[in-house]
Image (cartoon, rainbow, N blue to C red; front, top):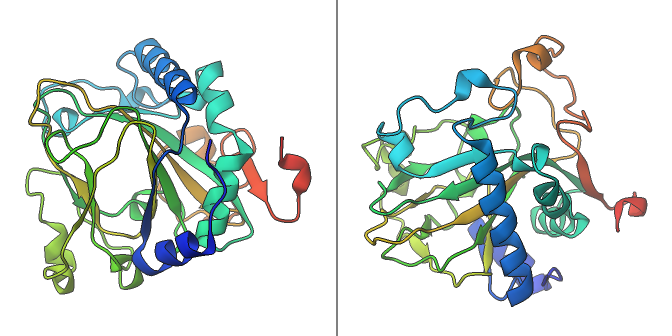
Length: 273
């Protein structure tokens, strides 16, 4: 895994809100990730989120379910995914790019565009989550080549700087985000085509989306959202169970190691390795 970052890469991320890292995984690591993700997704069946039967997929033909196959927190249900997702090196990269002291997992997601999948409408990530942070960050790992034809990511460079925590849903009107942020309408999107084994990181407040899959093949990606250590509960459920929500008050620090393990911290080197 290519996990060392240059200062130029960090600067680019902080200015633009995203960075693409080519040759992130070796060919052997790529095959390990592919096999683990395929196994974990197959095991999960129709359950989108562990311990959340209310989030089970009930209508596979609904628009959102034809945007991508989405399975969340595979690290909680599959030992191979746990080993991959809890790698301290991922936390270190996220910490350095975001310029914070430490990172916890918020949630991982397999996001797999099936053949002829719908486009992913423009949206922000962090407003969906149970905490607010201008330093939230996600990794997106290409398990297949991500192209203009099969639904690669697009970013609105610099939009993270002016975003609030207002959002648009991922729905049939893919440009709804521009009703929320009309000042972004003239930003030229940056496509993020990637070969399998490459990755990108993006800020939780950057406007981004993905095209449709206009091919008969599958476009697999494995992602993970990271929460800066010390982030606090904002009242939204997102991935949390009703039982966990019942224990929280707005403003509580989200530091449950079972739900949001700490991957890396600058002052806690024992986490490495």
